[in-house]
Structure formats: C-alpha cells, structure tokens
Length: 285
Image (cartoon, rainbow, N blue to C red; front, side):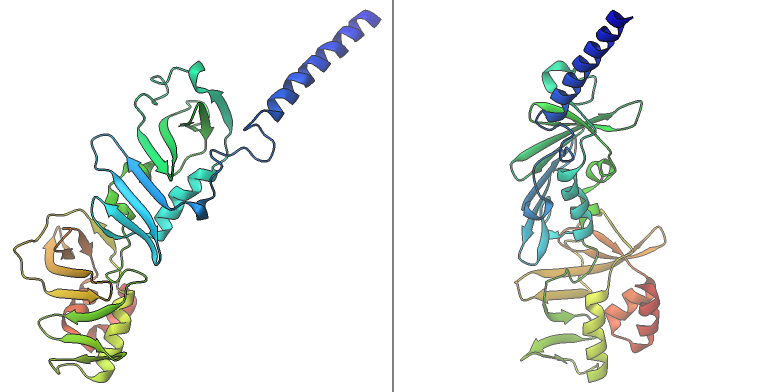
C-alpha cells in the first residue's frame, strides 16, 4: 500500500511539473495569453488581403482612419476598431505551426491575411468542437474566439464611414441646382440668394449629420451631372448623382461609384434646402 501511495505521489509530481512548464512557456496562460503583443491604439496601418478581392488598405490620420485603397475615403471608426481589437484577442490554445497540417486547417492558403503594422495574422478555418478560429502568427497557430472574420471577408465598402461629410472634414462649399453655399470669413452665405440665414444655419449643421442607411457598391457616374457637390478645406471634392434602384433612393458618389442609400426626405432636403424636410430628416437620420 505504501509503495502504491508513493507511486501516485510521484506521478502527481510529474504531472504538476508538466503543467508548470506549459504554464510558464512564452505565450502561455500567465498574464492572459494574447494573439499578438500589439496595442490597438498604437497601430497605424492595416491591410486586408482576401482571395479574388481587392486589397483593403487603411491608415490612421490626424482626423481619424482613412481608406487608402481600393478607393480613398473616410473609414468607419467603429468597424476599424473591431479589426484592431483582434490584436489583443485571447489565445485559447496554441500550437507550433510546424506540427500541424496547414492545409487541413484552412491556412494554406489562408482565407484572410491581415497585416497590423508589421505583424501578419493569417485566418484559417474553425475548430469543429468549439468553433474557435485558427489564426497563424509567426511560427504559432492559435485558436481564438472570432466575430470579425465575416467583416474581413466582406466588401471593402463595409468599412466606409456613412456620413456625406466625413468626421474631421470641413466643408467650404456646398452646391446644388437650388443653392450654392460658401463659407467666407467663418460664416456661410448663399450666392444664389434662395436660402435665408436661418435655412443656411440649419442646412450646414444638418449636412454634418446626414448619414446613409447603408452604402452599396455601384458603378461610377463619370458622365452624369452631379446634383450635389461638396468641397472641403483639405482640397477633397465629393460629387453626388441622385439615382434610384430596387426602390432605394441613392446618392451615387461620382468618383468612387459608391451608392449612399438615404431616406427620401433627407435626400430631398439636401438637394433643395427645403425647410419642410427638416422634421423628416430628424426622424430619418
């Protein structure tokens, strides 16, 4: 009996030693193991690569995140933040990459290749038991809880900021067939004289709030006459053409071809400056 007891004690000691080695290894459970050592607030460049899709390139600017490719536009801070948080995702389980069959795990080739500054994350398939995602970083493969892959696999336009006036951009001119607002000496006036001072004040404030219900991919409207042109102090110009498709009222950005789906009253208000649409815009935005 004593011999059996000593044997159990010895086995327990060996098991404890193995657990201790695993616990203390780099990237082990000590200090909440994370996918990378990056801090989301310190990341400045993001590139997303997917098979048969154009690369998405984002960069942190002075006024917020921007999409640099495949078209230049202001990015949705909310959606970019979702991607940045992947850097600190908890690593539930870790493996040496050489010990695994990358093809079986969907990592050769990966479904998504994500670059956060100089760090590369490769997204594969999911574990059939827990549904965790296989993500390769350097010479390791991690299993992580994943909610961002559908966003990464989707269209690049899902990362667009939906405002007609991106955050941090300052309009200096807004022109339609009905009015032509210009900012001079810190105040706005209508060169056509169709809008009152009160209408101008309301319209310029509401313009900053105007946001699409959704943004869709579309064709460039190169030959169409823009119905709304907004010029900014950073020399950017956004020209919009009104269209209608599948029952949706849209403003197509002439350069990118992206379709901003708007509430009908909001679109009418922006194009005409009509005060009658103000209450509707309040409900529609």
